[in-house]
Length: 284
Image (tube, rainbow, N blue to C red):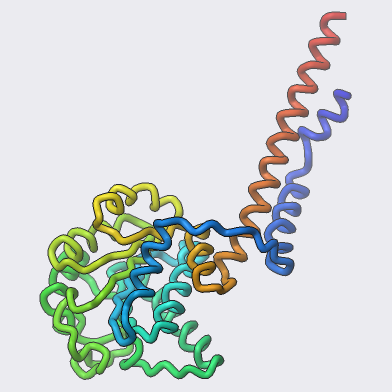
């Protein structure tokens, strides 16, 4: 018995890593189709976008670093996909230096996806990406007063004043909605200078670790909703009736969690069994 317990306590880490790799890969090729419960927080962002009339303009903020792409990209794609389906005009921007490339990737992916479906998105008319704009708080304040004067050009170097999508945009308040994709506390700056001063409605899409810290803003009415982590992304995909990266990721994450619980049970059982056997031996 003690030898068996020792073997369980000394499982080669390569075996554990291999099992984890299998747990990640298998659900990708063989979906589990686990039930997804839609929360009010996610529905709060979805409903705001879904209720906008065609032609409405949405500002999407890419304030997350490349390291957070696996968690935030799926919800970024879901939001963009929703906007395009609703024939909304989308303008992207980032106040984070490292977030510039994230927005560019999402815009390119969405354009390619809808091109394959036969829907041509005209850059400068249907969507536009302004790229990284420095200044942080000062930049957001200036956007509230003079959007085109603050941006001047988009990330491709196009003149903001000549872009049809920005024709009737004077300040931040001319956008019907703002979605902040973030992995830090940047949404609080957009709330302070966007919601409180300009009055623009804001929805937050963030990493799971950041979500608990902004529920106070949701309760205060400063946010319409929160899409948090892969779980929130999978809920948004469910509302869109679409299986994307977030849903696939949740399948793998669920299997990994189950596997970790099994490892914990095995470790504790083996340890307790060994201790029990040693005590019995000492009593003899």
